[in-house]
Length: 411
Image 1 (cartoon, rainbow, N blue to C red):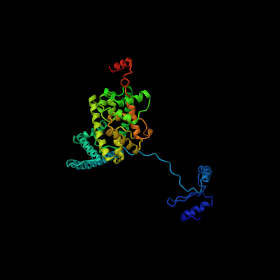
Image 2 (cartoon, rainbow, N blue to C red):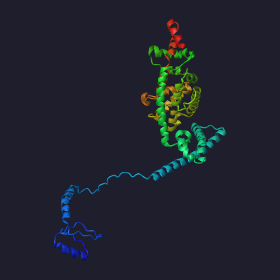
Image 3 (cartoon, helix red, strand yellow):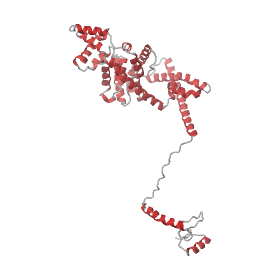
Image 4 (cartoon, rainbow, N blue to C red):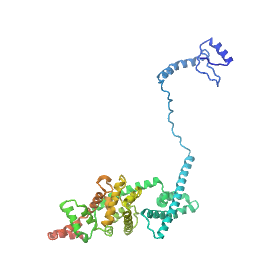
């Protein structure tokens, strides 16, 4: 193989090659640098080359000749962007989020205005349209305190603090996805804690009933199966006894810790007097009954997955880990018991609290789960109430000692 060299460089290399062999390794035309013969290389550099030459050959022999892939470079640590870039990216993301939320709010206001026009003309709205109108009205009312931070100069600096203290101040269109998921997780934790507390308190104190309930044949039959024979009551027996407890009677006999726990379980504010909490729970139960009537008229199958989950959550039914078919079955059973069988909404909510910490697939169907939960609530009746029922069941054969014990418990 011949290498082209300039004339002067070629003559110089030919004259030097007569003295000693060349250690030629490469030639760079761009730099015009030539490797000198071994005589012109210093002794220390030649010793260094001789010591490193076997290592190079050994390394080259270990390399697979068929492997032509280059060695990938070592991964480098990710370089952090400057603080100004990160801040600008965060500000840009938040600005886009609120801009899209504002556009969505304007669209919902436009849709709700058409729905309001339909109401003025005497037309009937569907359940989805009613929820849309109610949600938009609440969002508009939330804009009133939110607009103060925008109008007053330099008050927008306190907006993050206000949102941290009052997270429900923003309209629903501005709610972040992660914030909504965190709210659902928080509600789940609260319901688990309140369900355990309600189970403990109801087992200790139980439900109170008047003499009309205790003297009924349905209650006597239920008591006879639970206490005397140990026989499991049927679903119809549980429903017949549950129909005897109305909302007012049950709420009036709940203690303040139970009222607070039930309010938090239903997602209500737990602040105020006992009468205020009872009024808030009654108002929520009235709204649930109206919603049950709308769902019953339109059909449970017409609900979307998100609407189905929201309806179950508002009734205290656990949605995590449950399939849509299971949720539809439990919601159908709830509506049937609440509307057709006239079971108290308070008992239904307490029954769901008794079963909230259990897995959704523990029972074979949703109806069995709700009936079991009602049975557990009714079985938590206090002993003095059951003793009074036992006395009325077998009044002729009761001894004076039993009558005296019942009278002492009633005082």
